[in-house]
Amino acid sequence: MDLGIKGRRALVTASSKGLGRGSALALAEAGVDLVLNARGAEALEATAAEIRAATGVEVTAVAGDITTAGGRAAVLEAALGQGREIDILVTNAGGPPPGLWSDWDREDFVRALDANMLTPIALMQACLPGMMARGWGRVVNITSQSVKAPIAQLGLSNAARAGLTGFVAGTARQVAGQGVTINNLLPGIHDTDRGTSLDKGAAAREGMTEAAVRARREATIPAGRYGTAAEFGAACAFLCSAHAGFIVGQNWLLDGGAMNSTL
Ligand code: NAP
Image (tube, rainbow, N blue to C red; front, side, top):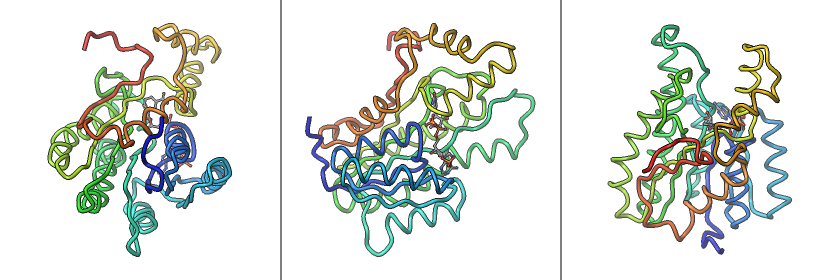
């Protein structure tokens, strides 16, 4: 399917690896030029070079922590400075650490809110005006299945992402009339560094092998396996496509059927 977005320009944050990388690659395969970001410059440059070589699109890489004001300023300068335009914004950042509800103090919550709620909101506030003025734009926020089905040990994530989801629910309806859609993608368990690091933690805690922990988690997923960054990226690219203009303020769960619900 031609996604109808060849020649558009996208900012994908936290995109040297995992779901961000999968989303960036799928957009590049649709002919979209990219601004990529991650903290580690080496992996970021490697990803940028791979995507350029595979697709021929223009890729700008900006190393920096997207959850800090300085990191965001550098990324937004590359994305929007000197009259440049962003048509597609995919927001992503690392997830907060697991823990116990009684252990987290105010600073832990502020860090989680900064990373997983206020950072995507700041990126939207920077990119939405240009999209609305031009009458076309796509925003996809990478959140988590924890928005629909809480994961107890990820309480910081549950809280911050629920806040972002509430913001998107209202804002998506305010900008849709200018041809701009905002939606969220909610990953369940995926085969990325983040997904497998949770396996490592559980294996160490419970004295099990990583393979045994993975098999146990896979058994909780009707699809019987972890998701891949490529299939996640394909869903993201479709939401950013010309065909998705009537999909507004939705929360798409990509979890292999893990959450048991009728609607
Ligand atoms: P991942 O494989 O660990 O990749 C994370 C990517 O984000 C890397 O490129 C990393 O590069 C970059 N990054 C992390 N923190 C950043 C920051 N502060 N500023 C800029 N770049 C940053 O993670 P993933 O599995 O793709 O997960 C992506 C998001 O989906 C996370 O928020 C995660 O919590 C959520 N999620 C994942 C799963 C899953 O099973 N994979 C399930 C539910 C939710 P650097 O480290 O070099 O910065």
